[in-house]
Structure formats: structure tokens, C-alpha cells
Length: 403
Image 1 (cartoon, rainbow, N blue to C red):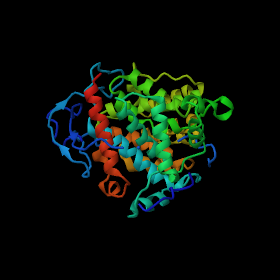
Image 2: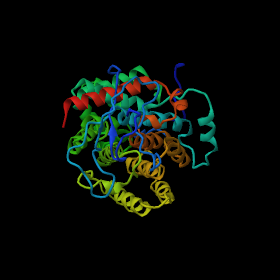
Image 3: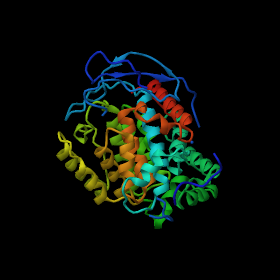
Image 4: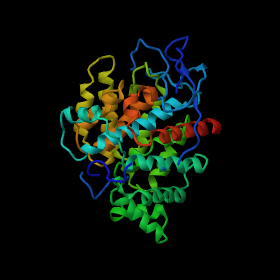
């Protein structure tokens, strides 16, 4: 997408946990269920560790407070994995989806730009203009709708129809050429899976579109890792049949799971992923994953995370999953304690800024919770209440479905 899309005008509970920072508070939001990329082949390319407070949801979300604290699903230390994590809460879910939308909207005006300093993004952050998101968030919401409509499962034909309906309603969101081609073939009688597999000479798309929208599967699949990988793969296949396109979604969902499970006051580290390591088929994504783990391990216990940002620059920020997905993860690990810093770092890398910023900020938002997103930015974000209610509906459905 060339810049921001052109279009029509437009909880965790607050009480301090009485024990260690490895306790979490549950809250639910009283909002109803809501409504809804592709590799874009036609386009350019801690909270303080001394602060054990629980996260607060944004002011725009109505919260039914519950002071009950429960143990976290994972300890954020190497090898410490608990078998019975608690249900995913509304603040984690909302932080993930709102972070994605905010990163998308803030990164959109800079898409296709070269690496740059912080001045342009700082001007946008200080402005009072509305923040309009792109196809990244549009498809994320469509995926969430489809999951909710099918009891948190992926029905490929229904999901494809949901994507197509969202596109036809708002085609100006900045979609690349791939999705419309798939939708047209499906209208002519082909299945979405067949249409997606026929792209690019039958190799399928290796872009980052399946990854950029995958956040809802982490909520829907919680706490089962295998179920999450299955959902990430199934939703990817509707538009992306290349192993790299699929693996991008699986890899990002693994790190989003980690972010949800890691308390805000604990360090976000890839070393915590042990038994739940993502099953990656492509050598390119496996190599990137190994590089991420190596550089992340070197940064642990230090304040120097510059190596992670340098790795992101080396990996690249193109529309391919093999570059932008691990780059976004590196950005989030570089700046895991502030959603705005995460977005600032992502935009500074240039390239596919809206999608890199969206994926990175989804990680940070899931880690810190919705209360860590500045209210002044949420007030500017398009459809923030709809996004928050979508997250809450997914969290409630996940809780009801159980492990």
C-alpha cells in the first residue's frame, strides 16, 4: 500500500496483586461480539520490573472488575513451562489486536520509504489526526469474525467468503493484487484453497499477508499450542500456500503466545519457548528463527538490545514472510516495554512499515496489555471500540471452549 489508505471520511484489573509479579488479574469486558493481505505482489516493496501492578484496559472499554489473581501460564524464565495456563484475559487479547491496529495505522504513511530517523514518526505521534488502518487490520478483523462464526475453527470456504466480503465493502484499504485474484477465481467456482495454490505459477504466495492477520488464532487456540499452529496454518492456506507464507503465520503466532503468557513486569525472551517451539517447514524461516534465538539470548540480562534492531535491518522488511516476520519479532524484542517505542523502531527500518509495525506492536501489546497503549493514541485510532470488543468476544469464546 502506498501510504495511508484513501477512503471515505471517516483488562486486566487495576488492583495490585498481593503476591509476586508472576500473578495475573482477570477481567472481562462487557461488549458484544463484533464484525472484519497478502504478500502484495503488485506493490512496493516493562513495565518496570519493580512495578508488579496488573494491566488496565483502555478507557474506551467497559470493564467488569474482578480482583481474582491467578498464576501465569508460563514463567518467563528458561525452561519453566506450566501445563495448565489460565484462560486468556481481555487485556492481553485487546492489547494484541489494538497494538496490531495501532502499528498498522502509524506505519501506513511511511510504507515503501527507506530507513529514516525518528522525526517523521514523532510528528505523526504528536499530531491529532485520525489514525486509519489498512488491509492488515481489515483482514485481521475478518479472520476474527470468521472464527467467532464457526466456534473458533477455520472453515476455508467461509473464511474466504468473509475476506471477499470485507474486500468488496472497502477495497480502498490498500489490498495487493493477490486477494482480488483469489476472490475472482472463487466467484467463478474454484475453491479458495485451489485459487490460492494457483498463484505465482502454482507455487503460492510466500508473502507476509497470512502472518500479519494471524493474531486472532492465538486467542482462539489458547492455551493449546498445537491447536494454535493448526489454526494459523489453516487460515494461511486460504490465501498463502507457499511454505514460507504459512510458516510466517506459525512463527508469529508462537511469539504472540509467548507475549501473552509473559507477565508485563517480566522480560520477554525467546528462551521461554521450549516445548512449544513452532513447527517450521521452510529452511528460510528456520534459519531466521535460529538467528533470532541467538541474538535474543546474547541480549538477555543486559540493557543493550541494539543487536536485535541490527538483526531486523539485516533480515529485511520486504513483503516476504521470510524477511518481515522475523524482523518484526526482532523489533518487538528490541523494544518490549513500550508500544510506541516498538512502532518507532519498526517505522525507522523503512520498507513494509505498516505490516512490520503491526506485527511488532501486536507482540508488545499482547505482552504489556491494553492498558499500556497511550489513551491519546487510542482516541485517534479508527474503530478502537470495535477492535476491543472483537478481542473480548474471542477471549470469552476461548474461555468457554476451554483447553
